[in-house]
Image (cartoon, rainbow, N blue to C red; front, side, top):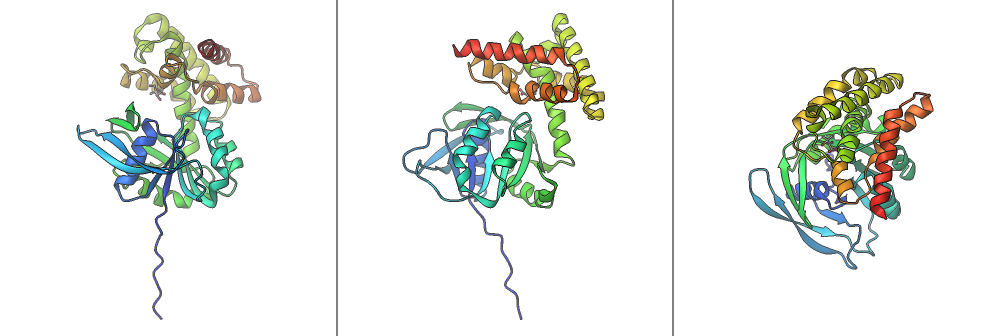
Length: 314
Ligand code: PAF
């Protein structure tokens, strides 16, 4: 008897967050035939179609049509790509948790750590994946994104039980042209990125300087080197020996490669937005405290960024 071939039914991709990354990914997913629905912080009363304007790497300008969910939308979410900043992630997921279907694919694309466990606990039936991206994109207006630099996205399952599904998911996410690669060990990759962010982001935010100044200005260089030395000791104490060994070189390489850039934390602080410090330096300090490892420089930077956020909010 002939068997009916089982076909993968394409499901709608819901994209949470319409910042630069949300718009870049939503347009990429929609451009290869997926139905895409944006979940906005302030949804329209009724679902409505909207155009994402994408200014591409090659200077091209395209408009890609997606749909924004309305306030009353209650359809099940089977595939979710979460592109909010780390502090906004859990509150946003709590608002839509009732719609996330058992077995749904949830991809988290945030800087920092400390929220993955909470997401897995909030959505026990979902398959949670983590992604790290070096795509360069910035927002030029509402639903207008400039794809400024080609990077790549590393993907891995948060839980080993979902690891087998990662290659097909990477292929699906990459179909629109963004490069997606499977990480051998996504948790270690998250730690490595976290360590570099701990070295660059708070210092550039507090000094209001471009990333390259950490290497070029002698006083900043001393602070940066001392911070990297402390990070190396803490990371080693936490068992991340390889990352500990190369953190000084890795952070200097990234600061050099992005010398003219304003780090994301500097941008957030200067714009009066909440930064991701709790999920970067704050997470590291918490892990160090639990392990009984002193980290006074990181503690001081954490406190200073928090204080500046508080002042900006008042
Ligand atoms: O957060 C950022 O801004 C970036 O990850 C980097 C490269 C550390 C600093 O620009």
